[in-house]
Image (tube, rainbow, N blue to C red):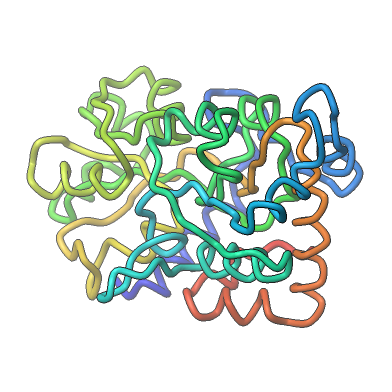
Length: 282
């Protein structure tokens, strides 16, 4: 299936599902007022302004994983994608450089708190766990968790009940893992969603659960995994960006998002990577 058609199907599915968070809780939608509250500087949490800290060192270190179309490398090894481009633009607005750091997704909060990175910006679902551990931005993209299976077997897996007995590959610490746990299905944790797809394609896993935006870019006819497709949507969710608890960078990013949305640059970047239909008004 054409990637753009697949994205349209995924988004249509998303609109038909209730907004639930991974792991069975309700997915928080970060309203401007809520975000303002979580983003307020907390002296006890960070000691001083996180914004001043980043400006002083002259670099914003962005924690990511390989996740097309949000963060991935071009043929020259440069990080591109909707999130990567927006992170680079945000860093520029602060007058600092942008440095990308691949992290173990399961340890993202530890990476933040240890100041190995300054922000997690990688299509991160705004779950209760995430919003309680980080200062989060407003939601900026809609998404869903979808089941990936070999195209030849897709007809057998068209309902949630039909996939419960499959052996899944899931990214450690991900929204997909939480959804598989909620199903009560067996799973193997892997490094990232790209590896989960590889496990299914090679036959070492029956299925994977990944983000619908990634599925649109990476599975189906004309993509990297033409032999795979998605069949079942398990939830509906929203993406946000995470900073250290109490960080004033979250409020700064919300202002940047509002400006970028108002001047059209956010929409233009989204169109570059085919995610414009998922964009949330700022």
